[in-house]
Each structure stands twice: as C-alpha cells, then as structure tokens.
Length: 244
Image (cartoon, rainbow, N blue to C red; front, side, top):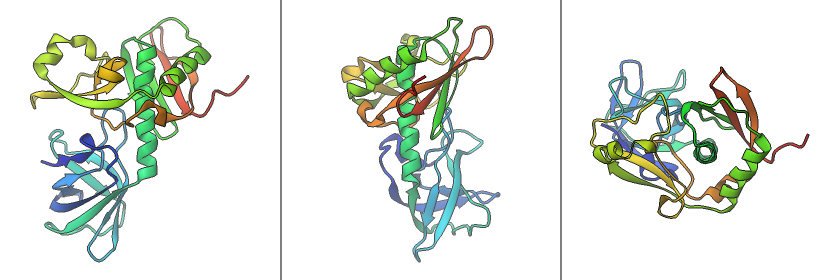
C-alpha cells in the first residue's frame, strides 16, 4: 500500500521516501509518494527520483497497480537504472506540469457547475482539456467563458473533505459522471468542494486541484463539438477567448 500524499497536499512537490518494491517490469513502488497516478481523466505525474549520491531516475509516468488503487507504480524512462529495495530517495514531481494540470482539473469542475448536465467523458491535459456532456442543445462559448471567468475572478476557496459511502448513497446527485462511479470498498469517498461551505460545488474526485479559483487566471472555452445526437464536447484552454 502506498501512502498517497497528493490526496492530502496537492502542493507537495518534493518528498523523502523509501523503495519498498520493484515490479517485474521495473516499476518502482515507494512507501509514500507525491506523484499522482493516472486516473479520472488526469494523467500521471512525471519527474525524477533523486538517489543519495545525487543521481536521478527519470519517471516517465505514474500509474496504479493493476490490482486496484492501493499501490502506485512509478514507471522509469527507458534506460534508467532502477534503485534497490530499501533505498531512500527524494521524489521530485515536474511541478510546472503538475500545476497546469491542477489548474485545468479545477477549471473542469467549474465548467460542470455552469453546465449542470450528466458528464459522459472527460480528459485533463496541460493545455487543452475537455468534458463531454449529455446534451442536445447548442451552447455559446462566449457566454460559457464569461460565466466561468466570473467564478474564477470571485476567487472561491477549493478544498477537500471526506464522506462515508452511506452519505454518498443518500446524496446520489453529488456524482456528475453518467458512466463512471466513484471507487468503493474503503468506506469513504473524497469530495472536492468549491466555495464557502461548498456553496458552489461538491463532487467525488481523486484528482489534484488549486486551492483558490483565482489561481486559474484567464481561461476560455476553446471549442464546442457535436459528438453524437446527445453529446457535446467542450474544450477548455488557457488565456482569453480569441476575438472573431
């Protein structure tokens, strides 16, 4: 089992850890990690593991073990030397990349607020993220951008809290995804909340996010695509909405 530090502090860019195992394919397992593992439409972190002699093991991506979400595997870049079991390391995430993903993931939550419709798919990336909505109507990207920027400019707090699985069962509307349900089996569900007392939004999510909406800066809806009779794909990008 890997202690998942990113769930407790998304801003933890560096952390001391110990190698507890190495998989048959050379994947590195630490006792604790600040590297986010690929899930929920957000890609796994990249970065490097620093050995005691100062050499670096470059990490190409981070994933969960095939058996579930208890163990995280750091996948070294091709040709990297794998450290020994028991070896102490310092884990360094690629912070600039992570922070852009945190901004984008938070922006996706804001888009789900201004478009309160079932979500059929989502993908977070560093420059162009998307959400697919179960909808038939057209939407105006300028209007959506304006409403999203209102939420960003208001600088609402973003925080997490935990509820029991029973509490989620009693509040099924917290789940916005139409096809994917929050993982169960550990007895609790992590919520990402926006606004004082979660007045703006509250939904199950295991991803990383900024602590205030104002950290997103200028963002806009870059494109709205029709992906079927009842599906619209909305793309989020950094910067102001281009004119024309």
